Amino acid sequence: MAAPTARAPSSRTAAPSHLAAVRHHPAVVAHERALAEDLQMRLADSITRFAGSMPFVYAHVAGFAAWMLLVETSPWPTLTLVVSLEAIFLSTFVMIGQNRQARFQQVKADHDFVAQEQDLRANTEMTLVVEDLVRDIHRTVHERPVAWRLL
Figure 1 (cartoon, rainbow, N blue to C red):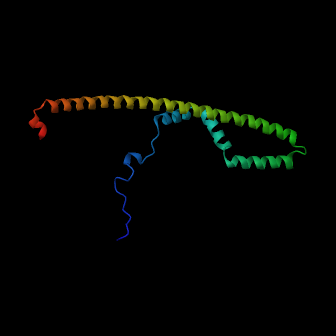
Figure 2: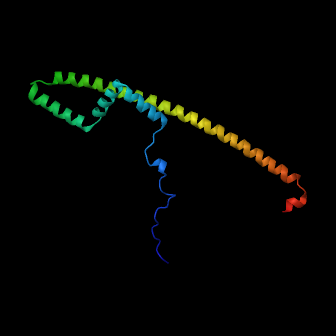
Figure 3: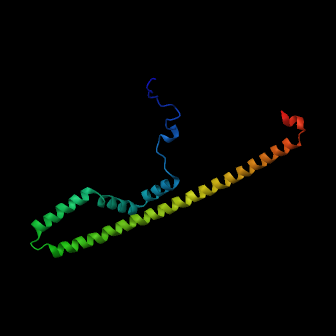
């Protein structure tokens, strides 16, 4: 018995051409467009993106080390103040991002709900049409003479 050979991918398994380019949900497109138009949101996104990165951590380690070793002889009171103020602002940016994400998720959920309701209505209508067709077929078959039913 021969060992199975690998088959070349058929056209059925290849990704459809309409999926080759990345397509986004309409709610995502609208959300991105609204963000691009709002300078404050772009600024908040930039700060949040940087604050959530390793270069941000490295900059803080270097800055705090330099502060404690080179700038002040007793760095703790001022350093505590700076770190506390920074934490307040960073937590505000995190909350802005969370609020925006929640709004986006609500818009997408609303869109998905409407789409599902439309699909449900369409399926219900198709089911009713199929039911009518089946009833017509049964009526036609039972109204024919017995000889026709034997064929």
